[in-house]
Length: 339
Ligand code: NAD
Ligand code: DAU
Image (cartoon, rainbow, N blue to C red; front, side, top):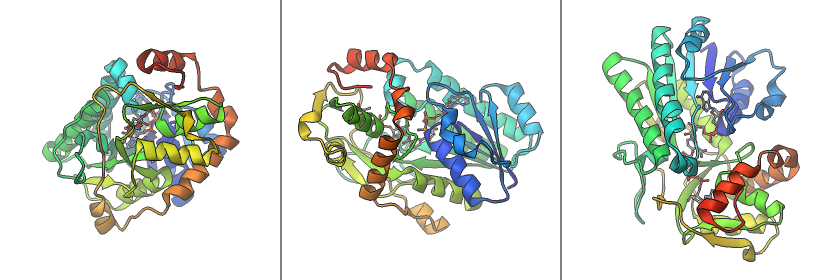
């Protein structure tokens, strides 16, 4: 692999991955294609702008002509991060989710096919499997049962990748990761939202009874897993990625509050998310056994590192926490806690 196209590289995981790839693959050129939605921010990559192996291209993955031009210049592999990624937003309007997550993935697959791309990694999510009860974990053969418009659009993209491989011999692979946290995560997602609210002296809005469970992974561990799949993964395969770190939202919230030196009066219980998935838990034995990947970060250490990052980057998140979100959260969930 000489030239890698990263789509959605100006977002949270994409920007961490671009940095990871430039650091770990000395002979790879990275092209970042991003349309810069509200979640895309070139400041996330200001430290690599001067790297001669890195190019940014402003554009949309649904734009077939642009993809033709770009891939015509020679792209060996594609990793697709570009997406609408927030469940609560998908409950307000699913149109952008279907457009980018489904149609965008189809356009990328078709362009990559036309131009003979050798490897294509679709960055998917454990949410495509739906919700678990108290026991069990998602494996790669768990049937897809997405419950939100976001996860339904991601599942549709996964099925397109599967079909292109199965019927057309297209070199697609799929990763399905659990909840990420770390630097540059947009403060609509629970960890940066709660951290920044606490820094501002505000409360944190905990949905429902707070006992929904998420399985947490530090973003750099996810990036290393994606690197391993791009390098060594078998075409046509799905790889679950997770770090065996299940926490209820209440437990997570208490740890965040403790890390910020605040007390539990900062919790404000608000109305539950409609259709809220109860529990996610990932069985990642396949990628560990077949590709030799395993997570390198302990949750409490990496959470402390994340807290420091948000403390030290107030300019980054203050500009983002704007009126639109505040209005939405207040309308949807009540109280004064949201972004
Ligand atoms: P994000 O919302 O932070 O970033 C998405 C990026 O995609 C932004 O830079 C945005 O500008 C770009 N984008 C959106 N529409 C585009 C389009 N039409 N054309 C080009 N660029 C476009 O998302 P994230 O949290 O970094 O997630 C990245 C990917 O990883 C997504 O596909 C998501 O489904 C998946 N994922 C996320 C998590 C998580 O915990 N955040 C876990 C597993 C999988
Ligand atoms: O599992 C992977 C998925 O993780 C990714 O595919 C998604 O892109 C990513 O957004 C994330 O989805 P979640 O819905 O799990 O993440 P979010 O941070 O929105 O919420 C995490 C949990 O916290 C969830 O149970 C809802 C709860 N929550 C969230 C917010 C924003 C609250 O209690 N209060 C909040 O204000």
